[in-house]
Length: 473
Image 1 (cartoon, rainbow, N blue to C red):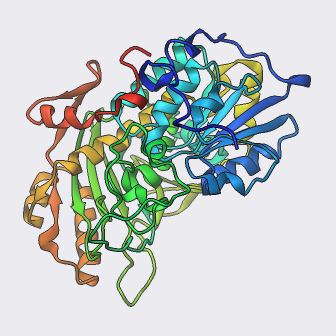
Image 2: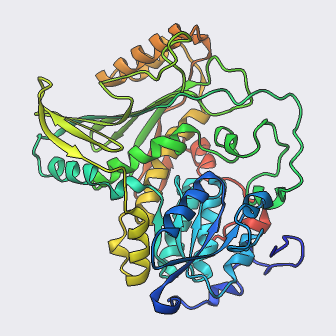
Image 3: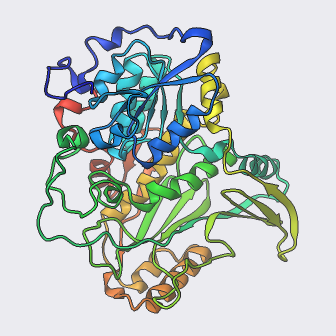
């Protein structure tokens, strides 16, 4: 076993980089025969998946793994180096690139540190846990000339790419409105009334990293972090980010929506989760209304299935003047306004995404990346806009919610659909919450207006000094 987070003081600057690793060369010398040598940081379910996918590529060598949970590393035996502290892994000269599949709160600090160490990066979605963190990621990638790709693999799927070309070319006329949705059945995470012991095989200081090292109030230490705000981003950051990233890619957005207003809550379940299990957000960009919604409850207690809205459970519905495009993971189609299919868009869910990253690492052509860091930062920012409005939410009646979304027909229809589903689940509608409308100034890169102070406070979280991203990367 390599590494011990307490065995030495690792460089005294923020995140332990800065003084030493920032001097690393900006261009790596690849391994023998132009092989790309990688280290994987975070080897739970998704990290193990990445090891499998990258391991299949004939020109890739997996050199090392890193995880605060030593049992997750031990399953690989002697096949790779096992390094508990990722900062030790970044010092290895025989690693060209790292794959980051850590919890969300670690994505930005680890990416910045890896760029400073002269490594290329493949980082999971959502790219950042805060708007400020995403900005720092993009800045570090540019400053250190690193190839940084996002794990939003649908960018490598032919379906949204082809549909986007047709939409941008005006094949279906101007865009009237957009609906982005993810309906996943999930269960409550359980309820504990007192802090849970951290398993002895986990270095909790390393696991928490930049985030607060607060008592653990959940039964399942690992995955259920997604539903607590200190470490996760709810279903918006867990799944909706894929389809928001598709929108950014299809429509070639380089800037986010300029406003967001969220409503919803955590209904029915009595557990330690904090993020909404029913959430819908009305956004606006260039005069186009966008509804983004996630739902985790079944149709009803008797019908354990995810609901259907606008003929879909997942994906984007882009309503244009002369037809509608419906695209989800795996493909979709365009239909005229009478519902007749116009064109199919077959897809594959993003096969070849890992290959694309390795090819970009070898060629040093960042423009060849299917999912460049800037795109991943943007789609994460859109998730954060919705979540920030929701985190500022207060109890509201359905009439108040409707009054604040009345300018958009699809938003009102969404409220009706959500209300029916909540009633069918015997939910307490008195738990409905609505956030303020927050306005984002693209030029300033921050929220402005009436609720700006509270929103900007949530655009960045205070990081523990040992693991903090530096102000200047």
